[in-house]
Length: 421
Image 1 (spheres, rainbow, N blue to C red):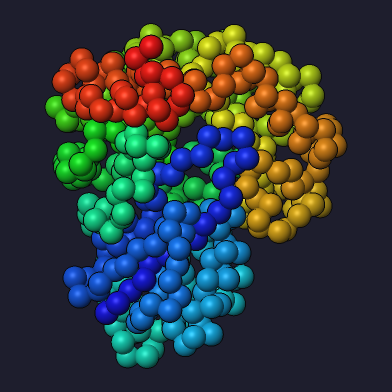
Image 2 (spheres, rainbow, N blue to C red):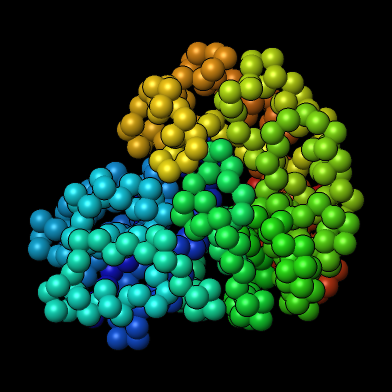
């Protein structure tokens, strides 16, 4: 069976240095397909779809809300040609009813142990309109190594510099944050993969740099410590979402190769100040993720927050505006209050204001979003801050003899200065 798996393009954050990481959802899904399926993967952010190429079945994997309208366009083209289309992925789950209008079938939930039946239905011309497994989680031990062989590896670097490969060690999240849909998508129960399987997958990735994409590693202290202990011999260098703020955990994370973390910075408290300091004390960089436009935000508080970020010397910052994605508490609350201004999903890129803020106009929040990017990177452009963060990983790799010397020259070319300067 010739199965074309497509990852639709989307517009990146306007202020962000553009680079492309290998998508995680499609390679994890590909691992659930039986051997008789011949997969042709197209990442439309980097490649062009050949709509005339013969194919038996098309799958469209959508992660982000800003992908859905393009995903629907792609499906409509194939279906007009008589080719059946199935959708899956996070954004399919968030926009299921709308997506069904453009699909022969949609798959909701996690695919492990389920695709044999879907493909049998396809071959018997009995494809169901919806396979809904959102509340039926498969055994986490069924999660196998992702099929990274479907990727065109040459495409996933930044001007020749090797970026990170994505991997996950758990699913689900016990937290239920206001702007986040993970509790709907993956459940409120933390489900760690068997550590030996997760570490074996990391060891088998032909890349020394990883992004552990778990929603948060700070969910179970003993599991977290056990995971890091098993990762130490790999000598991988990795970034992740938050790590638990305990000395013994941070020490193990650093020994296991922690490079930097994405840390939400939501206020100017001493708690946040000390947390950033402890990361830095352990040699772990910090990329702040700063969400603007919460109901407790005023113009003055946002300006103070930007000053605070410069004061605590985080390594990088990524600013977004609150975006009420479907199936989040934010969406439910703002919709109930009739504060959502746009349901054009192309606007849901996290850099456009699509709702009425509580303490300012939408135009003022948009202005403050631009101010945040401009002010934080005024004295040192984002590319320079990126190369400094890259220097950290180079030093770590040189310390344990895993550094590839060609990366130093390539980094200088990519970021406009020498990585070691």
